Amino acid sequence: MLSRLKQFFLKFKIIRGLRVRFFFIIFLAGLIPSLVIHYGILQGYESRAVSLRTSDIQNQLLILANHLVNYNYLLDTTSEVINAELDQLSNLYDGRVLIIDQDYKVIKDTYGISEGKTIISEEVIQCFKGMNTTNYDEINRYIEVTTPIYQTITVTSASTKDQNTILMDEEKQSVVKGVMLTSVSTDFIETTLEILKRRAYIIELVMMVIVVGLSAFASRIMTRPFESITNSINDIKDGFHYKQIAIKGYWETEQIIEAFNQLLGRMKVLDNSRQEFVSNVSHELKTPITSMKVLADALLSQEEVPNELYREFMEDIADEIDRENKIINDLLSLVKMDKTAADLNITAVDMNALIELILKRLRPIAKQSNVELIFESIRQVTAEVDEVKMTLALSNLMENGIKYNREEGFVKVTLDCDHQFFVLTVEDSGIGIPEEALEHIYERFYRVDKSHSREIGGTGLGLSITRGTILMHRGSVKVTSEENVGTKFVVKVPLNFSM
Image 1 (tube, rainbow, N blue to C red):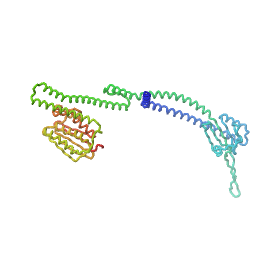
Image 2: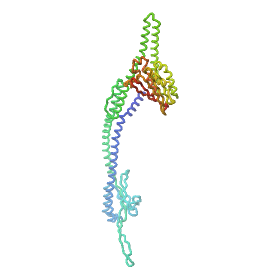
Image 3: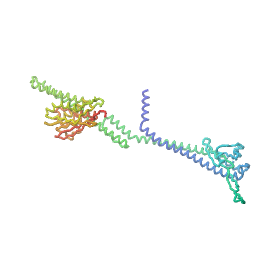
């Protein structure tokens, strides 16, 4: 049962495939016009044949109508000449001719079955009024034509010129004295149509085979670039290598390939970053442990250790433990930064009070380095942020400003806002950041001056945590720096988290 369902869904996927859709589109594009042409030609032929047949019959009937008048056939139907002509016409067109007089009586029927009967129909009545009518019965396959039989009569009228003179005027008029009702078979048109249909079906069958072949070929050609892309992506997936795809095709497929190659490049960068991150984490975690191991082995290798040396070694071990603990805490913070914004605990926070609290905590560290902390509040700011995460992010910026500063330097923090964002500026008079290093400072474990960073206990994760926090709050952080002059960070965060 499961295998049948699998086969069914597999067939359904095939039907949804681009190649199948291309096939049907091309097939219909070739088939529909041929069908339209087929029926258009047949209908056009039938209409044209009926029109020519009708015109030919009408010409013959007009001639015959004149003969009927000349032989006075409406009064005497014994004329052998006229009867021969009627029979000849009837046989020629495989039809029937009825001669109807003014009393709507049939005086002549080439079939000989309706003579003496009365016929009153709309066509006959219209014909007596001088109107020729034609009707094509597609079901029974015959053409019905009514032809008026005109007779010219002389009408005499008297007019008075004066009291003693009377003028006689003669005027000739054509009067309908009878009607010829003619029915003509169109079997020969039907026979010709059947022959044309059979030939058309043969042509259509050949065309259908050609269209199917062309559709299959064209759909395969049109989808070949997509198959090549799919195969290349599968090769990359199976081998997990980062060889870029170089396939020429349509403009659309080239756009897809270009986007995929960019994604591939990004994946390569991320993979390298991941490997470097793992290597750095291993190294950073191993270094304090190695130091503690060396210190502990040094103590154990001596039988009698002086208290002063023992105390010094234990202080070093405690420092290494603190360093290890800081690395682990920063790593945990970084993992939290990688989670979605749904994990944020958003509350309305007084940013002025928050910065005052951060600076209060950092003043002892600044005092040790003789660095002056300056806070300039342009206006009161209340923002919707995660207080814990934002405190950590801003603390990193301010603490870096203190650690990488000079003796008697300063760190200036400025807070301002508009109707949408609050802007926090952290500016220091420190050692600065080289221009080539600016684009790397947010990378994990990246250090501009590794020796100085180890001196002050940096882990290389602070700015990465800061940037992650700001981005989670839908904000931005920008940096400008000049070596031996100082660094300036500008943080811009929405006042309302939902905006």
